[in-house]
Structure formats: structure tokens, C-alpha cells
Image 1 (cartoon, rainbow, N blue to C red):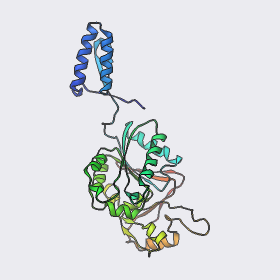
Image 2: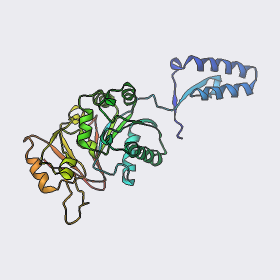
Image 3: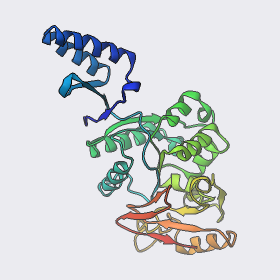
Image 4: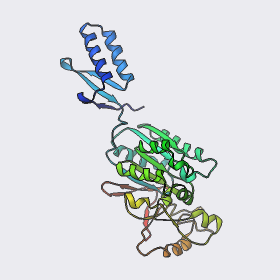
Length: 312
């Protein structure tokens, strides 16, 4: 556990700690040092450290910085590999830029909400973050918004509102769209990012929040005609209107099947992209690669094994 101590201004010291300081000062004057030590421990149990300074003054420090606002916020788009070893540096460097060590993260499960193992999928992400980032105090909550009914549940909205980081990842892009469109969860995510939270999207989620969403399962697995689905267009609210294609350089199909362009293949993807309005911006993100956007400065950084492609 990383112990972070933040100075507290005299006017902001809680009454309970003020009372301990007064009692401790009296105990020291009476040379009752065991009582003074006990009172100091009492303060620590309440989340505060009392330090003795020269001249008899006492400095108060708050344990942890969970209540402080992040210094910066980002939009991070993973083409894939959000829990691969290559992602650890991406998380660490971004979290360091937040300027705090006590970080609350909400893992919103919506894209995989149709899967029987949805909780296990996101528990694995939670376990990875906790194991990979021991130099932070991570408070990670699963927010099981798996249906439209759950997308307006007040307790889930409160969890998102109290987050420094919001994460959505693997699953089905179109399922995510159906469950989140015009919901309080979607609006809360947008509002929270505008207030300073960092948004991390991986794989399916990068498509869900695009202007135009690629219906991967419907085309690749079901065999439907080439088409686009109207995405949630969240990027327009916090960055710019864009369509994201993750898994851009996928090679799972080997020599016999082109699975690039998120399993659709270049030929079909070219036809699909030609269907879009002329002013549509399309960006491809390679596997085990992330595009990191500083939402204050609009600076963009690419990290990982691959690169990012301006397709159109």
C-alpha cells in the first residue's frame, strides 16, 4: 500500500482532529507521553497524521489523496492488449500524470453484458490492474451495467460519478450501443469525462463509441450484408467525431483468411469505408497498441507494439 500524505490547511482540519490536537497538546504539557502517542494513533485511524514541529506547533497531514481532483485527463484507445504486459507502462505513465496515487476506477461491463462470463471477464481486468500497478492505491469497482434497465440504476451512476478513471472493453460493439444509447449511464460517462475523469476504451468499446460502428459479429460471424450501425458518437463530445477500427493489423486468419481491419479484411473494409459520408474520419488502431489523447492539450501519443492509421 502506497502511503500518500497531503498537508491540510488549518481551516480545513475536521473538528474531531482539532479535539485530538487539543487533548494531545495538554497530554504533552502534562508529560503524559503514552497518552499523547495514543491520541496520535487515534488520529491516524481517522485518516490523519499529526506531526510535531519546532516551537510546539503541530502539522496535520491527510492520509491518501483520493478526494483530490486529477491534474489531467485522457482518452485512451486500445486496439487490443489492454491486459497484456505491453499495457503496463501505458497505465502507469498515464496514472502518474493524474497527479494522485489513490485512484478510483470503474469497470463498466456493458459491451460483454450478453456473455454468461461477463463478470469473470472484467474481474480478470481488475486483477491485472491490481497486480501490475502496486505503486498506486487502486480502488476498482465493477459496474455491472449489462442491460438497458441497469443503465439507469442510481447506484451505478453514483459509482461512475465518483471515478477518476472509467473503463469499458471487450464484448460486442452493437450490443453495447443497444444497451447504452440514450441512457443515463452514457450521459454520466460523458459528463464525468468533461469534469476531468480519464476514459479508457479497448477493443469492442472503441467501436461502440464511434460515429459509425462496425458490426463485427454480424458481418464476420453471421454473414450479414456489409453495413454500418449508428454509433454512440461519444468522441464528438470530448474529442472529435471519428470512427475507430481496433484490431487493425489482426493476423489470426493466417495466410488463408484476411482478418485485418478488425476481422473484416481489407477488401470488405474498403467497400464499407466507401459507403461512409465523404467527411467521415476513420482511424485504425493496431493490436497491442494504444492511442492516448490528452483532453486538455489535444496532444496525441502512440504507445505499444504497433501504430495508428489514418484510414480516411
